[in-house]
Image (tube, rainbow, N blue to C red):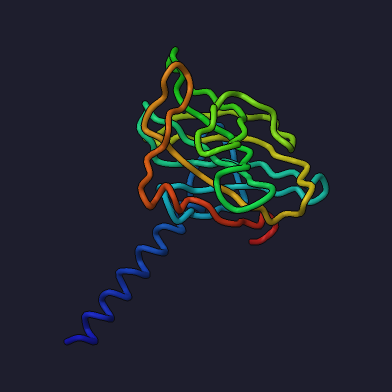
Length: 186
């Protein structure tokens, strides 16, 4: 009986993992945008999609995460270490006129200003959309100066006040939402 339960558990776990991977790779973006590679991120119901151009060393990304329309999302590269402080972020939310906006900001402390700021690397074509209870940030990053493997951080918060994202929750999901990703890996 115990081996039957274990087998059933393994089958259900496999179905879940395959379904999660398919949700990432089979996702259809608006305006016929396509991305060749994607990764289901382990926390905050988030996914990162990208196209890496080896000749220009630029990467086009789409970061998408479940989020209430009153909240915010962010995805960042930390060029110097793992974790939040030092991150160079792309942030998106509905502004005071209820339009989705996206911009860049630097995370210089555990109480960042979240004000617009230039980053230590180039970002172009930044935009955001809200679709099916997900916020999506689109951008082109680079050229990448330090190779294709980067430390990255992703985050989400519950509220925006005066067009400034407010502090995110301190749940384990939020505190563990960082890692390393290689844009050249398949």
